[in-house]
Figure (cartoon, each protein chain N blue to C red):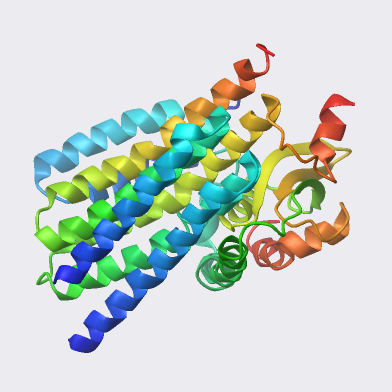
Length: 116
Length: 173
Length: 88
């Protein structure tokens, strides 16, 4: 059982590291689209590993509490399914509203096809 | 407006009912009947908005297992690789980036395949699908890429989604 | 037992750090990205805290946060797409 606790702690620590990377990216990246890219670290590995550890904990240390294990799995699935939809709607909306990075992008095919 | 078919309604009903059971997680008769009635109403109204093709594609075992292989084996490996790359960029100061938007041809024809490919690309850190377009029967994605290393077109497509698209073509044409 | 609490506090601190970007972001898209990230991080922190304290009510709150966290992003995105370009 101690070994399982160590595995759970390592999983959650890995996801905390990736969430820290995403947070640093959101704070320090130079423009809006790059911030979107960096923040994608948070809902992928920053969340999956932590919820996997939580799922193992709920299965093995809560005496077979099926309800909370199923709820954790549903939370993980919902984050993975819904996050890219919001992300690409936000990226498209930001581009069409005229938000551009300060330093001009070298290749910009969407701007070429939409406005020229 | 496209016509609703019976398999589409059935598939939507099964999805809604499974979600209801997962959310409530109680198996008394009253709750199951209430969930069934609500799911049937939702399925009747909304099936035509989101199922336009063959609803039960996973009844074919070959397609089912290659889809399972894609979501459990191919996609997580790409996800971990892209995550390590992005974490390296973030921890070393966010300076060495070269963002740009590239236009990439996509070989998948079915709507499910395109949706799965676009969501996979958006979910890997470093690439976001922004817009889809169709010109002369060929589908294109506009992808925002954090580190443009290949020119727009076929080479950028291979660099971004080569393995993902190869895995998905076994499931949807 | 208390390591779950430590990790939950760590995730909550990360969520609080993204609020800096939400406060000073120059455009609406920056603020929305920071809000989305904070929502996901708070969801994970709630799950861990629920397992630490043993009360199921926090899991329900995390489920609702994960379910409706995407709606505000989609709302702001659609608004920017239709209306955002007009005022410039």
